[in-house]
Image 1 (tube, rainbow over the protein chains, first blue to last red):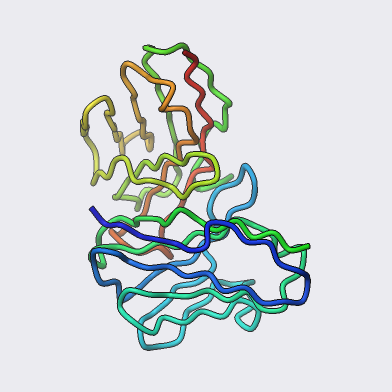
Image 2 (image 1 turned 180 degrees about the horizontal axis):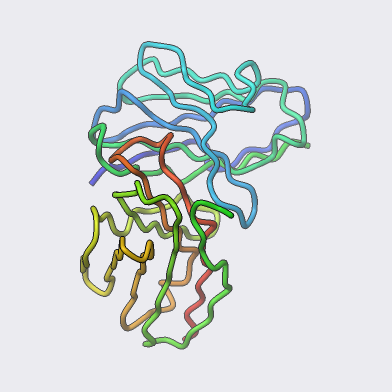
Length: 115
Length: 113
């Protein structure tokens, strides 16, 4: 099956600093990856679609300058939370799919705490 | 009214029980239906993936889709404590497009030993 690896699994940072989260497809190539955010006891909210070799597509209300996405290779997408603030504290999850019509497979998520 | 409704629970059952998890939806265009299991502090894990109406079985798990009633179910037989997790239904009109994928809010299940 499709394996999506996410790193780090948790991170604590100080307000004003930037944090990078990596998402890798381990056994397949993914031209498209997706970044989600999840608040406690809530469902997943799609933030952006990461496209290999081109700009990411952000959902309405998601600040593209705050959440920088880079998809430099077919197996790696990164999400950088810039100038993090406590309200950015959340659970960030990436996903990818084997083929464009296949179901999504998710990474194990990154818990970000901004102090 | 939400596009996908899912009873948030929490649902607590004894070990060995049959568990029924359900979602209703309003968009008749949905054709692809998924169930994900999410353990605490982990990403969702795909359990079942079905297209259109009908049943699909995988081990102790059975997914049912009734498009005429806009109702999907996940049954877990012989439930185990390791099944304790949040279960998310998800659906889309087309396969694969995350932008068209709608999740339920999740049902928290606890299986008591």
